[in-house]
Length: 639
Image (spheres, rainbow, N blue to C red):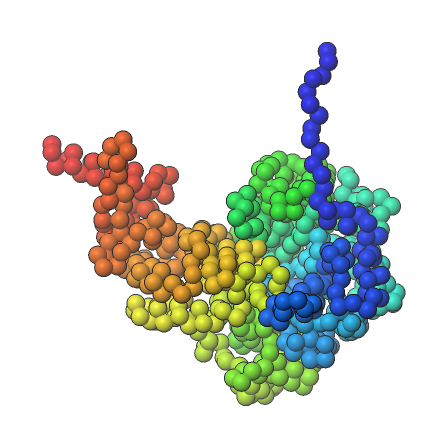
């Protein structure tokens, strides 16, 4: 019998796949172009430069028609768990003044960024970072990014120690093995670094059902690395300071009653990025995949990486993150493929307590007699200005007391291993430099985040970091006006839909669409375990008060005791929030009156909320529940 079935269509790989293949394990064309007396790299070199931890940017505030762009570079540290030794911090502080724009920026993945580096200074800057206990290798590009972990340096809670330990070891396991980094930036000199754990070394060499590519300079990644970036986190039960549902791969430490590590719960398939105007791209929460024993965790990580490496979309980079593989395949098929590479079945996911959002600001005991202090950094920008000399304060404290620091997933910093005898002197420095105590920070500011956006990010279409302070002031004024002076909730802002500040996990998010215009998302859980939903398209920022005043009035009138803004919006539904008219103090329901016509019925907000609860429980539209309730009531009256 002749097979007349057409062969499967082979999709052409994206051009970036070819660039990676030609790069000679991330060497070219970066190495050659670095020697040229130019202000910038070619497009092909830019793609490879990302793997080395740098993005080429230009300052759009300085663009002049007919003149060359103001090219500059951003460097990002690879800092597993947010750890920054004092030598590295002081080096970054010096480099920011010597070569950069006099600021340091804490990222939402627990690293630091330097901005404004010129091409001619790129090698000196990067070499100085490496020689002072830092690295930028793999901080960007199509491979594992910085591995996150809870930043609290507790010494009497072993689960936190395990989370930090395994964040480091996962980072080592998935680090690029190519020698290109040291060849290019340190002329072949291998910087002094901590030795890898023997189990990590053994796991990288062990070819477990095809997880390793034999005879490759990159045994886990191969010639083409990953289809897109890959993000990991390790946390402890109850601590969601690292937004574990937003990660490609999250591990949750599981210990026994004696505090000994037994294994990990595993989640996979989260991601925040979207592409403007492309409905096939969307934020997604990670799924629960299963549980793995401690002894098998590295082989399982390799199995998950290999699944994405071999089956992720290499044709369409907008569809290349692992979240789309989970979405297209479903959890069961994905788990089955992972288990093929793993060589055995995963164990069932273990029950966990409810997660909480934690930022660890203020003074705390470590559990070993020493202290740590969490310091809020507005939008992550460490700088000096007329009212706040945060850069001066951190430099003075680190120099004086030789303190290490941990960066948080909310762009703040923790100084730790503090002798209690030094607490007052450290607090005096912070106070003298205008650093607010945690009690004095408006919670709207404390729990907000923003990406850098303009003028340096090439993807930004509008402001974010520079705009959010005034936005928060306006929201605070509105809350005061409607009688909610003590209210706060999690607000995040980005200059484009890519989601670098994880806006889709905020109770209220401003996602940049075009100049001064944002898409508004609401309704995420305050502990970042539920996604926000799109609420308003293309809201001009001048209309903020007109849009949000009735929403906050509705929130005040119809909320349940202690209910957060995100939970309220999710409970009553976005339709009710849109329809509420404060003058009538009612919500409006559209109920069917026949084949095509629909009529509006106004009800009190609290009654609408009850209807909404029933509708959610029964999986029906609110209008259907309301129609049934009205019909039942009228039938009873007419009996």
